[in-house]
Length: 220
Ligand code: HEC
Image 1 (tube, rainbow, N blue to C red):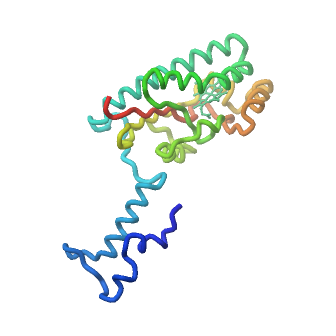
Image 2 (cartoon, rainbow, N blue to C red):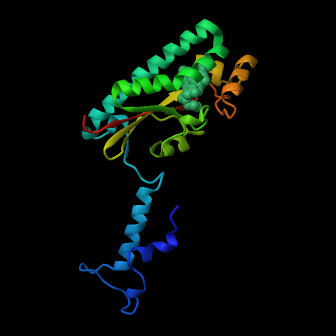
């Protein structure tokens, strides 16, 4: 955090302007007031959780669409690949074994799909299992709203040279084995072995579990 108190001096509104009282710029605006407003504005857009242009997926401006489509495609692939691997692991060894498979492979699968699509990809949540999935700054407003909120759809965020897309993920029946209120003791043991700081059990079916996200460059 930057000390707000020091800001006016840094932008040259210090004692040198004091003797003549209020100084007015060419357009007659009070320089000190405008300067402070500008600094506050810059602080707001620079700070995490500051205003960022965000649109429901269907309402995203057409300039953001090509990148948003690339992001959607990569997320579809990731979602399918994770589900397939998870299903395979549960079928082969049951959910407790599958926790170990997820621990070993989920992030590697995510990175592989990201590389294939030349895009950045991930998953995050307001109740994390793996701390490596902590939200990037642009995702924090979504994550902060997630707790106790009714679900909203996919959103597109203008990130300057990139476009961010964030997709909510909901708890379905099979997810309950590892994220539900009553996980079996052997599953709970596997979770606390691999994720001692886990916060991702106790979800009900239909509840928002977290998000998949992607960042795609604007010019492709
Ligand atoms: C076999 C157990 C298992 C099942 C079933 C399961 N998960 Fe998970 N889930 C995990 C594990 C383990 C992780 C941590 C993966 C990692 O290390 O990145 C995880 C992580 C996540 C994350 C990433 C955020 C975080 O907290 O780290 C999301 C989102 C998620 N799961 C959603 C779901 C959804 C939605 C379903 C059902 C469609 C589901 N999971 C089914 C075990 C499971």
